[in-house]
Length: 158
Image (cartoon, rainbow, N blue to C red; front, side, top):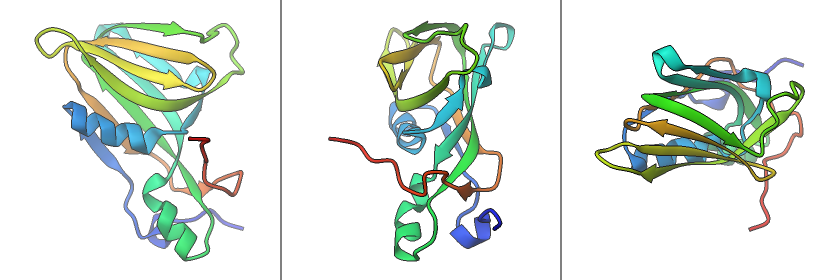
């Protein structure tokens, strides 16, 4: 069995940028239920850049996969947040290197003069808060899609 290809999915790899709240909402939707090992977080204070290597569910392909009776997919993506002045976490044990985290949402809380905080809400009551000068976020797929290990789309009890 081989991994799915971008051609089979009929979609090119994502490469998106967000410079405003509406753009950030699109990235939030696409990263919902993305999982990542705690070891795949990188904060480079000198570059004012925070990055996560995510295994994200391909929400943009969910309906096509359902209609064509093919597996749901995940893909590794790089979520990069620029203009970061500081990072704090809540409910995240950074000393446990085996922890797998899951993103529920990515939101922006407005401050003064375009500055504010990007809040990554995590499953299990965790959160990452990034103080930013301005919204500067990118999401880029860095691998080919692969069959979702669960074989299913994430579901929520709404």
